Length: 558
Image (cartoon, rainbow, N blue to C red; front, top):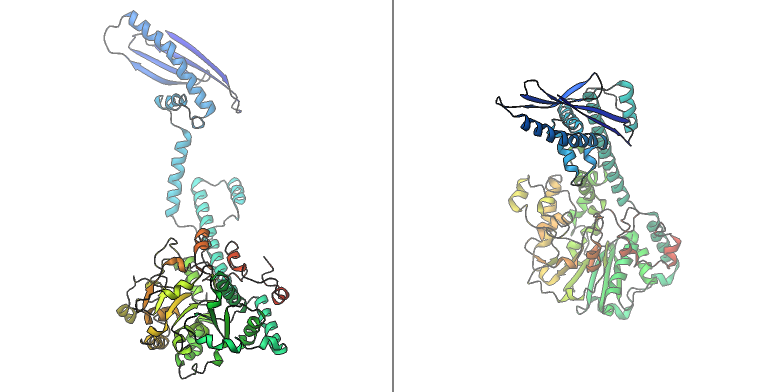
């Protein structure tokens, strides 16, 4: 006995026509029912076979069974055909459930799933095999497709070529990143043409313009330089433009600018230009004093022999002025670690100006409390409350750098600065101890003068030089972390926000709220490599109407 079902359908996706003949065959013994499908007269396959128990079945029961199957099977076959034509993966509605389950109930497996499993197996095998030496790799995906077509790659060969291409591209990207970081380091260490021009023009102005040479401050204001009821800021720099921004931002952010006194220290070659700028660009009612290191009687070779040794030490000079990539094992470091190492190798770290902060009590013997500022900061809030801080007998009020929202910037502990494999470091320091930041510090000079901070600083610096920088790679912060140990008063991080010179993902809202923002890092705001979205917080204090600024085309790329 046979029942025939004819299914004919057309496809809109270019499959053509689908015609299948479904047959229902009942064996003569009536003990089995077979459902088969044929797409043409030569090909026939069994879809379902039902065996009946070896007992008497009435014709009525058999008739009802066949009648039910006659009604149900066309729907099953139609759903199967629709899944084939449309693709089960393209539908997500409830009525598609039958389309998905139908083929599985009939014993069919999705070819795409099987192909994915096979491809995964091949890729997994390729990841453990050695890439053949001298394997020629395509330069692009288009070339890879062309090679597959022309060379008839099998799946295994394709997987090996694909892996080799990806590893090569990863290596190229890695090398490019290290080259970018090295170039950025050299860019950060150089002096921009505009800033160099500004220094030269102001130095020339000092020699030709008597007003540029006028005494700073005027004679009647000289006693205020020693008056401890005023708010004394100390800034050590050879960057005239940066100094102008620090002073202008502090004065404009103050509610009592007439109480501000700035003591600016610079080197001998920059002194004339620095003096000219502040003589010609008054920040009254604030007071500004400009002094060169050559004008301090205390700064003699006898008092700072270690710093002179640091500047002339061959190992130090090679470390800061030598090839920063030669001999470096770039395969064992990350770009972020490499960037940090390059940043620590800035030549400014062996400059006397950078070490002067350790001699503040001797350079300003009549002052009791001062705020020391780096030249890459911007003041955004009145800092007068800092003079009311009770340091509890401590010397240095600073922000800690081991906790905060930014896990990159605020994650510095002593282990980040010292070589703890050296026995002296391991004996005296705790690698997990929180570090603190230079850049904006309140110094209680009366308390400082009762300590041996300077002597401790010198002794450790001298020993590190003797050991050829085995304990740390110089800079001013590592020896200060040792010398000020036990003398630091922690202040709230909102007073001093760091990282604007190397963290381009800095939270802008936090930047706006901070009292002082610090562009520590290579991407200084006066350099072209500075971060564009962070630069406006600095440039708002640059006087672009000034003739010297305009003539030197300062930041004209903005």
